[in-house]
Image (cartoon, rainbow, N blue to C red; front, top):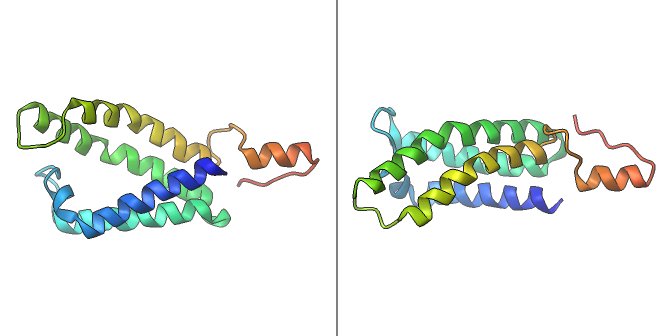
Length: 139
């Protein structure tokens, strides 16, 4: 399924960026988070693991659910980043960057649930199997 591969690639790329350029993420880390360097690295590893998990059938449901929860958990940091930019902090991004990013966060939650088999919406594999008279287990 193309949607699953795209989301997996998105998360693996984001995870690699967390690991290779942690300073970018440390700049937007809320001050109340303890051990911010470790959190940035851990979130990068989680993104990579989640992306890979989406591609492995036995892990797919768990990966979809955990990536959806992850997207919910990082949303406050994204809001904080947008507020710092709105206050004129030295951020190169503008609202042309932040508004779509904030608006797309719920889409990432839904997308992870959908490709993980949680949304109840059929996937292309399920549609093809149904047409062929077969049954695919998504659980």
